[in-house]
Image (cartoon, rainbow, N blue to C red; front, side, top):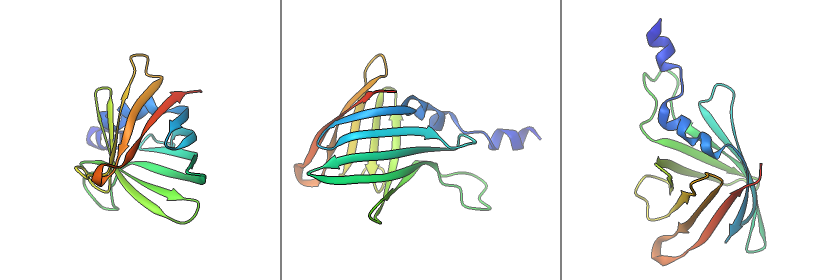
Length: 146
C-alpha cells in the first residue's frame, strides 16, 4: 500500500514550481498578466495567459507537469508542458527549476530557443530573457500581483 501512495504523490521537483502560483504582471517584449494554479491533485500546474506582443493578443493556457501515459510505470523524467493558444496553435516546452533560476526550453531541453529567469530573494519578481536562435529574443519581467 505504501508503494501506491508513494507513486501517486507529486514529486519534489514538480512541487518546487509552487512558487509560481498566483497572478503576475508581465512586462517586456510581451505584456499583460498570467496566473498559475494547481489542478486538483497537484500533478499539473495550469497557467492562464493574457498578453499582448507587437499589438497581437496572446491568449491561452498551459498545462505543466510530467507526462505519464496510461499504463506507464513511471512519469517522464522532464517536467513538460503544452501551451494551447486561443487561435489554435499548440507549443511544447520543458521546465527546469534550479534554485532560483527557471529555464523554459522550447520543444526539448537544450533547445536554442528558451527563457531563463531568476527570482528575487522575496520570490515576488522574476527577471529574465526569452532567447531565440540567431540572437533574437526579448527581456521579460514578471511581478507578483496576487
